[in-house]
Length: 436
Image (cartoon, rainbow, N blue to C red; front, side, top):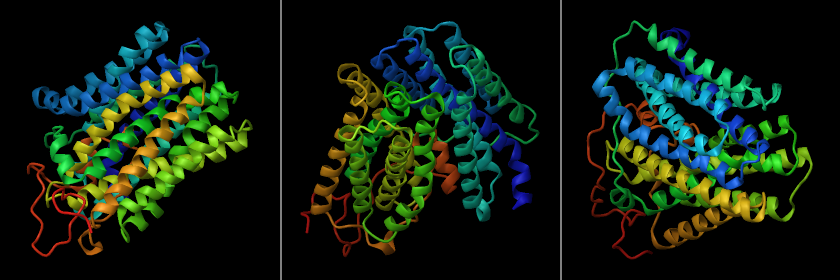
């Protein structure tokens, strides 16, 4: 395995720099903004701005690479990401931070896609699964490290903004010094919600609601922790522990979803998340340990949902279109990520910190209700016809190129559901047949 890792070690390092700097930037902004007196609505708009930029980056980055090449595009994106962080340190106002945060989201999406494209070009089919697993672990460790480093200094100064900018610049080095040829063009996807819906209504509705829930939490968890009185180290842990818990919980949820109806597994995860939502509202724990334990349980549920949804959608997808399906779902997730922080921010401004978990409650209740309705109306995909569950990084750190790296397909087929065999049972993708 070491021989396979050495050729891609520079790319893994570049990805780690990207995620480390992104972890710093994602946490310093809500912590500093809250200390500066920004409203929860304004802080929520930071997440909305980032999601808008991220979705646009996933769509437009392939065109930029096609026009000027991988290395030039990557250099420009990393440079603007560093500039964005420094501008936020100089212009401490939400009117500047929100559009600049959108630029950060655009740059991060494009840069991540380019790194993943290079990795995809260097990975052999026999080691693809292991390399993707290592890549995912490196990214999780990097983003967690970036968030935790915030606890080591004063968030009111310039230091962490400068560190984030420096590390974004360091991410330039591995690709700038690379002697390998440019990889294939980036994976390009279009957002065809109608085709995705025909493929699987559950996947489209659930991934949109997961976008609302997860982006609300990812943007405003630090604000919630600050406003209930947790210290800086606890705030960093409150944001980091759920991501790590979600990474660990993907394995048992994935194991279960490969052996039973994935929609039922999704309902279990949503009920689990709903129980944690209600605990934050009804119990309202105040101590550090109670909050960290509860948010770990919450993260184990919400961050395990996305890969189950993608696996369910791919079970219904025509052969050879899994990247298009996964990429399309990621863009739907992005639309939910645009709406979620805005809704949760307004809720927190009106009713206090609990507005965050009231937002996630609504998302999880709607997910449970619609998924149960579809379970009642449509038979599950037989286990023999399922694909394999694929562990995934958090959706906010994924791009359409992530799916290409994970699956390794060259997909040009349109996203249209293939007609089922004559003897196939009705599925979640079939809207005209009556349920059993």
